[in-house]
Image (cartoon, rainbow, N blue to C red; front, top):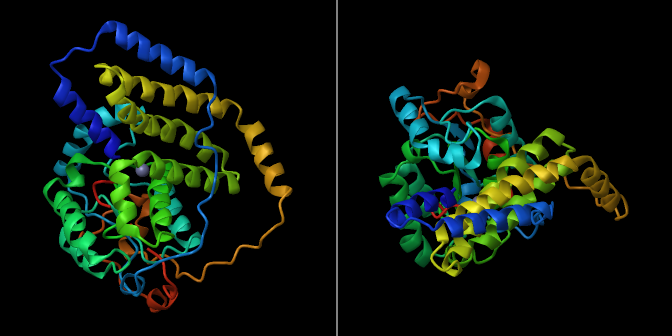
Length: 358
Ligand SMILES: [Zn+2]
């Protein structure tokens, strides 16, 4: 959630400038106006499952796909406190929670399997920069000039500014790694959506560079895919959660994009866009049954393409992940014991930017 980082930076940079009350009310008014339209800008749309450009060395990696960092109480509490502004911004106490429950872990595993993302690593509250550097070297789908410039910077940034303290869920396309700190299934789906989006791009380094210029495109694609995934499963509660979290998160990007045009009112514009996201998401959830019906009709009217069942190996779980209550406590350096199926299940090709994340 680099967007939230941006909010922090924005506060730091312009903290001395007090945004005019007039501008604030104007932005809030704009937010209410936009929200009243029930804008469906993140309408469900799946990311095509092909083509896929996957790095063979990462596909063949026998390590566990999902790893959970060992709990360090003082650090996790500090991270939770650091994440309070983000919790308030997205109005969800599970943001930057630094521990995970079963729904988020299961959702992640199911999405990885359903989309054959065998090359993707998901680190849940885990700090492993050396391992990420190893993945950077193996990620052959990103051209080396990108890997050893932007890629090195991204891994270095993750090492110096550890997400275990400052949070910030994101996907790093240079290491094909999703970093999660929030215990919210919808956010996990969004970050995995980025991974799937990159996997179908032939020029992934260039696509990562484009994110630095036009993040809204990437964000839209990932969130629409997350919603599509939930609509396909008729996951009503999941859709409500995604509307409640992904729309205000999207608002942070919209607010950042509008900032330069807001004539000195970038801060109220930013928060106005977030408020608009909150209102809009909640409004859409009120008509969720109607949307689900429309979604069903739309797909019922199309020829049915039987999906090819994934040949991907079941997600390599570490023994520790199966701890009751999923109050996970995996060691950072204790990847799950590889199973026989690990390597074989990653037979095809599939593939993830650290901060700039996404
Ligand atoms: Zn994103």
